[in-house]
Length: 127
Image (cartoon, rainbow, N blue to C red; front, side, top):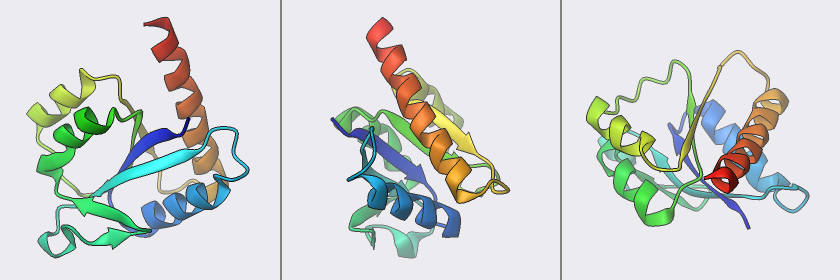
């Protein structure tokens, strides 16, 4: 069953990583389903990236709950602001948050995402 993922940001690194993960789905031990991208620029709201809708930060909690998100991926230094009270609500769900570094290469980042997916399996089975 694919892991349900939300990306915070639509910058080049998020775009490249999400494309790479989608391209690898047919070979991956753990397929990824991207449910949403989050971006705070109003002109990006409701646009599509890789066929996936871009939502505003205020909608992330509802998306996490509605779709039972496994993983939220953010890039360190990404300037999208999500209010503290929204993070508190998200972190009470079973969704894991993985923060990636901009300085890492795409293959390393992709491996970190797959590791986070594996760890979320372990966490969920032990609950």
